[in-house]
Image (cartoon, rainbow, N blue to C red; front, side, top):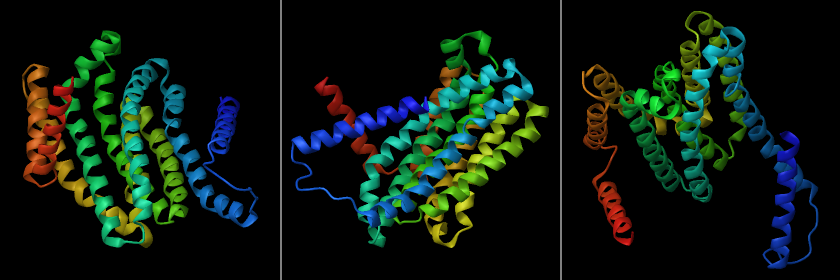
Length: 307
C-alpha cells in the first residue's frame, strides 16, 4: 500500500508539472534552490511526524482490542469506527477551503480571529448536532445497515461519536497553527495522544472490552487535539478561541442526548425531539444565528426550485 500510494503521488506530480508547462502556468526557466528546499523540509517535517503519530493512535486501538479481547469484540467496534470516519472527512474538506484564507490573514489579528472563530463555531455546531441525534438513531441505523448480528455496535457508536468533537476541533486549530507557523507544536500533542491512547487501552480493554476502547479513544483524542494546546503559550490563545464554543454546545448536546435516551418513545420521535431541540438551544445561546438560518433556508429553496 505504501509503494502504490507513493507511485500514485509521483504520477500525479508528473501530470501536474506537464499540465503546468503546457498551459504556461509556470513560465520561465526553473532552478533548484537548496535554501528553499531546506526551509520546506524544516517546516514540513513536524506536520509529517504528526500525521504518522495520528495514524498510529487512530488504528492502534483496533490492534490492541483484537489481541486482548478477540474477534467478537473487534467486529462491532470496527463497524462503529468506519461509520465515524465517514464524518471525519467533513472538517478536512471544509478547512482545506478555509486554510488559504487563514494563511492570508495570519498577520491581521482581527481578521484572522474572525475567520478562526467562524470556523470553530460552524464545525462545532455540526459535530455537536451529530452527538445530540446519534443516541436515538444508532440502534435502528445499525440494524438497517448491518442487521441484528451487530447489536453490540450502537452503544460503541454513541460513545465514539463524541471523539469527533476533538477531531473537528483539532482540524481547525492545526490549520490555524500552520497558518501562524506554529506547526512545531503538532508532534508534541499527537505523540502524547498516541501514548495516552495505548495506556488507556491497556487499562480499560481487559475490564470493559470494546466499550473501554471507545472511551480510551474519546479521552486520548481530547487530550491530543484540545487540552495539550493549552500547555503552550504560543497556542493557548488559538485553543481558547475554540473552547468558547465547545463548553456551551457540549452542555446542550449532552442534555439532549441523555434526555432523548430516557424517553420511552419510538426512535423517530426521539430523533424529531433531538433534531428540533439542538438548533433551538444553539440559537438561544447565540451559537446559531438568525442570518445563517435565513441564508440556509434561502439556499434550500433555491435548490428545490432549480430541481
